Length: 282
Ligand code: NAP
Image (cartoon, rainbow, N blue to C red; front, side):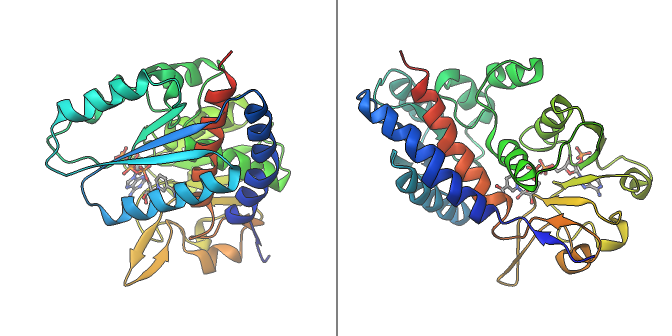
């Protein structure tokens, strides 16, 4: 079998320039101009390139975006005070703090400071709790983007077996909940899982978010499975994912590439969350 490529780049482009653009036009008619603020602390090269992509996608959907930069020496109080100001600014609908943060700044304190109604990364305890309870919320961006890519394949997850490798708070756990909400049977794997291959053997969908280059290869993927590769690594200047793309392509029915798969969908979901936050304003 030769896998169909699920292009996150194409799916994102379509969502941004049709559905999201139309929703922004409708908001503009109500005199609401959705605005996203990205807070960037320090000089992390990878963060800077993610931020550039966020700005580019904001333009495509027609929303405003602003990057607020801090030196890596900025104090925790400076960051918290800025979040306070953003929480109280009616013209700003969404805010994210680009991770990682310097060691002297508590991620927990920073996330807890963000007003959940502006938490477009979906990382605050309130929004994570609502996701868990199946309530309407701002769903964190990578899992949301993954679900949109799965939807783009036309797969109905009801009764399907989904194996998720990785249980992080930002990918593995939330995506497993979203798949369960669509009636899939989910198997969660992590570093202490025994006999991973057995857990993969009857998977209809495999989602890999491990953070190890080419961790899963074609020999472990059941014939015809859909493969979502969340990982992203720069090996000697070449990007690859957590899945060995070439061998996986021979077994999967559909697969996300790296780059151009989950990455653009994550940013697209961030823009959509900002629009949702703006739409909720009366
Ligand atoms: P993370 O927080 O480091 O979590 C990794 C997970 O993988 C953990 O649950 C860990 O298990 C599990 N794991 C590690 N080694 C394993 C092994 N040998 N067997 C089975 N499970 C193992 O990572 P993350 O934040 O979810 O990110 C994962 C990857 O996705 C990274 O490459 C990251 O850069 C990428 N990512 C990409 C995007 C995007 O937009 N494209 C967004 C987010 C993340 P334990 O819990 O037992 O330690």
